[in-house]
Image: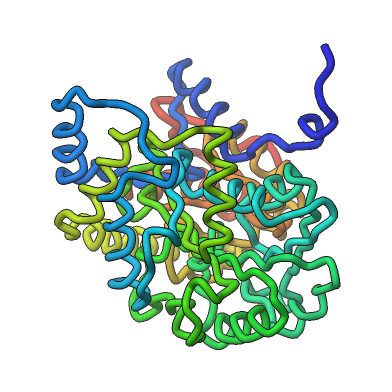
Length: 406
């Protein structure tokens, strides 16, 4: 069977790979604990369900406009004005049927020519590099040199070349939970606008922040209208509204870019489902208390995760400021994060995601959006498997296990 070179070069998603391994073990009845999960456990907001149900009851389920249904475009305009203090028009929006991920893919298809470079700040979400490659662009990774999760503007500028088309920013950041400083965002806006480089803000986690670390609106640093700007904002309902299965995301950009994206989308998905768009309208226009409840729950879970990890000798922890992930440094135990993740799954039945996939080798991405009890037990199992100072015996499920390796 002949497979294209492009398909052969695209990596498997490590998060989906480990999800599948966990599913197989759970189906066998194994007491697996999943600390790699990328979705909140909250229920779908009631307003989303009611709006979705009302649409279904009409039995009028047909094609919609490629860009999205008018009520959703209006809701996104209002959402942007409320959260970003920026006025946009429906013509600045493209709704995507594959969540924020497809919005990014459609965007890259619309702005990247072969050999164009996209600067990606590490640690980065695993799909960024692969999406850039899929449109025949070149990902250029900028990794902080001081062990922090925020690069310096000087290091970013050094990576810019005549082929640079865009800079990709994810704040709050998956996988580190870092929120980039206002200074860095402001410097990036000024630089990109002056050089004619697209600044792509993946803001899917922007409502999930802790304490006073609320991420700044990128539009704060420009007086330009959206139609005269190189700033592009990606968002969706998956994370803050715990609606990962609805797969509705959107992009906000100048009209030339959104029109190009609409053409791309029209040729690969035609339009998003009217039922799922209706659910998104309900979520955005409905009662917002669920978002705040999730944010507070995650902040509490984060505090517990930090407490457990800080009691773990050999692990270096940087406290997250948002999202539901942290990226502790386990390199004292193994500098290969892939080997370490495999080891922990085999020995302790704990799913983690290798940090090397996010551009930070020796680290593991751990999620704290599950139950507190599983999170604590999961860290205890990891301690037992790695730390010789921890108790030699532990119960995993109903089995009493003894550490008999070094």
